Length: 231
Image (cartoon, rainbow, N blue to C red; front, top):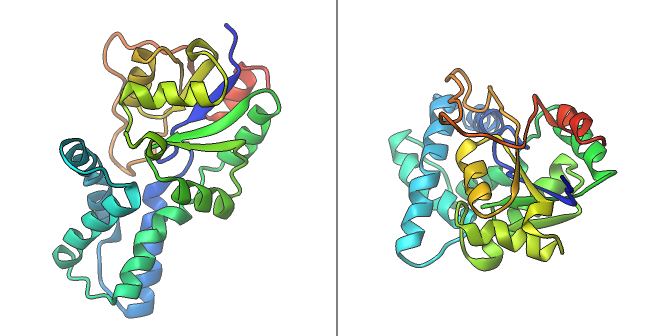
């Protein structure tokens, strides 16, 4: 197997969105003396992600910042959050400030010594760039479904990544914690590496891949993946 480029799902695979959003909420709560179940808030915000993307497939396309804001606007009254417009905008940009898993930066640096590494996220480009600068993520480039106004698991998103990186589909491998994303990449002709993140959803048990699903690599974290790939 010849792999030239590794493209990474980001939310949940590279960064710990749940702990990061809880932390942002707690900072806001202390500043404004708010009593909020921030774990429930983070879970509810994330739960709105896929339905919001599905709606864009039936209407006008919108980027993830816009979708996050639409979900947030619905959550504010449900959690009795009374915030100024400036505070709401700052909270919405919490997704630009997500914290990486402990192995992410050292693992990516290892993998980068042998492979081209890039994001392949539904997050918009400005979000991914801000996140990389904030978290020290050493991407060679930032790729997003925004570039073609489509969202994974549309096969065109995966194929776009290979094309832009000058690799064939078989030379491009998606690294992700989510089996549905990996299966989408397989259908588009890419190789796959499964890196489960058992703590992504906090206390909720990890949902295993569907029966019969097979990936080219399975690793415990990015350092283990680097070891398996000889980086």
